[in-house]
Image 1 (tube, rainbow, N blue to C red):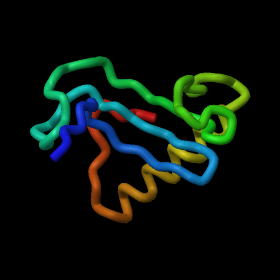
Image 2 (image 1 turned 90 degrees about the horizontal axis):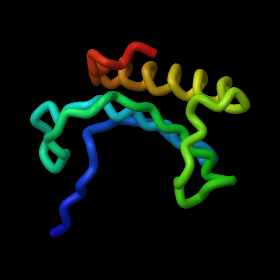
Image 3 (image 1 turned 90 degrees about the vertical axis):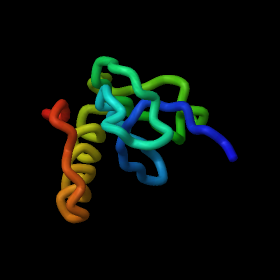
Image 4 (image 1 turned 180 degrees about the horizontal axis):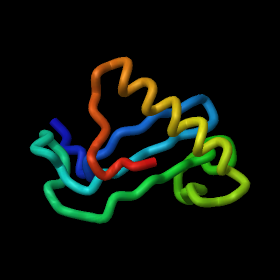
Length: 90
């Protein structure tokens, strides 16, 4: 049995990109780190950075990718009935 020590989050990925939103609290979810932190977005270009070491979220060269994936994430959440966290205002 392993324990996944990561802050509560949701995200979406394609073959090339991964977008993650860390929403800042565990909301009672099992295996999530139960600590408050500032909400944060991360975007990884898996082709250029397969180890996901450097987020390109906020990089103007990736603004269209970030916008497209954010829209896709929110559409998927709506389709599945998964509420966005109150801090997710993108």
